Image 1 (cartoon, rainbow, N blue to C red):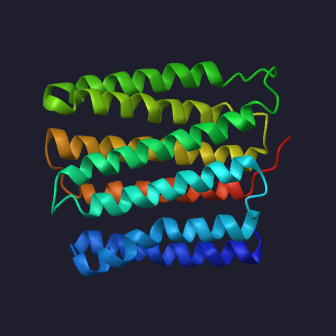
Image 2: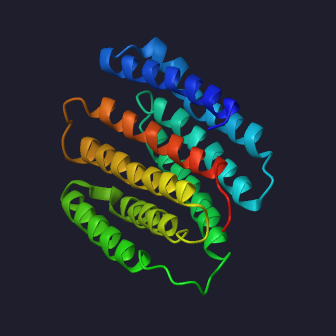
Image 3: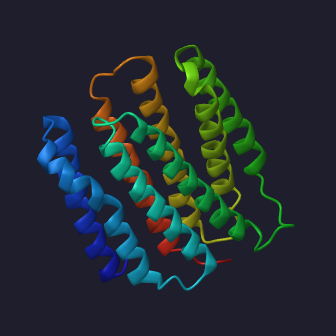
Length: 226
């Protein structure tokens, strides 16, 4: 890892620790500072490292912009519950841009076989079906929005696997780990909101979300087409 990447990783680590400290102790003042910085640091890092030199990076950048908007909107949901819907839409758009970026890498060698892809489709289809089946009795009027979101984030995870053999293995592994953690974080968020509040949910949700975004950003920065 280059000195620049180490520096941004160190800065991100400090924000990571501050955010988890604020979550654990319910320190709202610190949350208001640390949460918006999560994605801001990743955007700055992505720009400094890549200068958005490829369409892939531009799509990841746009996805991060909408993720930042989602973070801010979800911070405001305590004042107005409608902000939860707006936050959901922002993250949905974030995933759509991630999907677009991952498909661009898949198209580098569209005819090349990917032995992992069929298993990824089966795995994430089963996981998303099980999750929605579990949530459905508790969703009420949110059934359609949550179903759409579940499908989109599952496609995001599947397309992250489609990059296998198209980019270097480090980039592939980091982005895949990020996609899986994103799916886990959003699943925990949905269970905590719609089924029942879980002890320590905020801590787990934010830890997995921050790691997810970090891994996707790192994998994108270290991306080298094969």
